[in-house]
Length: 435
Image (cartoon, rainbow, N blue to C red):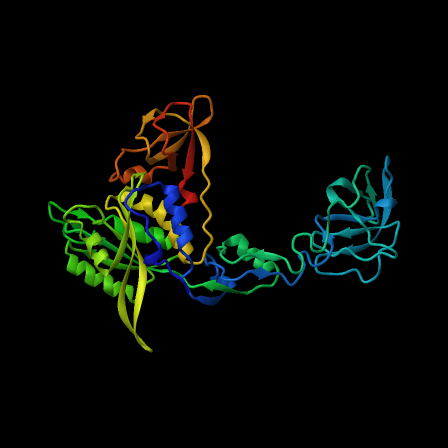
């Protein structure tokens, strides 16, 4: 088990680009989760802890790719029809007991095993739609033009013995589980799920089922972040809302360390007198505060906190990572998806794959500050010419969560860009690439 170390992780006080921050996180972080075994039915969303190597071929035997008629290519005419007697019938899962004779055709179905021949195997399969069956069903007419080995699937064509079909760090989704099942794998060594504690802070924050004061706001971030983290496959604990009191926050963080791998907070991460979260973190460990060149999202904090815990072997010191997100809702979810997800993936033993963005034509004008990467909420739209364009969506501002609900994704405006004009090609990042 490994962990990010506060001793070898120092970002400093200068503004960091998003690319610099993510690269540093991935360089300094590694898996902290133990390994367990799960079966096929419980494997979805889990991260592989070791490679999976096939012990069999897939397909296991030469077989037909279609329903049709199996023939020897050399028996066919190149420029005229060929009538052949039907000598046998083969269905999937049933083998022909004797070799197939030359000068005949065999009715064969998808997945059925290609039989042996007297000297060599039959080698060509004509789809039933392209054949003419006689009225008595005893002969079939094969039309000219088919290529040798048409519709023929070879043993091991997809997977060979000894082939690595899945690698450690991959997430097991539907296709990964399917390919494992295809080679007879029923159990996987996977990393245990990361345990994440989620906390909100602020005297003005109220839970939705509480009576809110006239100066208070309902807690958006905690519920939103928990939902996002659960969607990513992590185990979450809701540690509620903490007041603007450094001592209370410090005690809560010290307790959370014992049963969690990571703590994620929102609010209290700026440089004001009431930003007690940052002060509490620094008192328990070290806050590597980021001044990120991102909009929305500044400020974001990352660090480590530690405390002594009692184990079966005695008192030991435990250290875990803590990610402090901004208090504004759009900034909180944006930084979790853009910055937090790469970190959490790495700590979980997964391979972080940068999300794919797509070039799309801008349907709006916009000005931005130089040196900052801006993530605009955006919606895809078909213009009057029938072409796909992208437009800004919703009201601007890091607190305007309605702009996220109806949007299709982010427009990524790079640091050196200062102006967007209609017709410019922009990078569009769909939400389903990052959540």
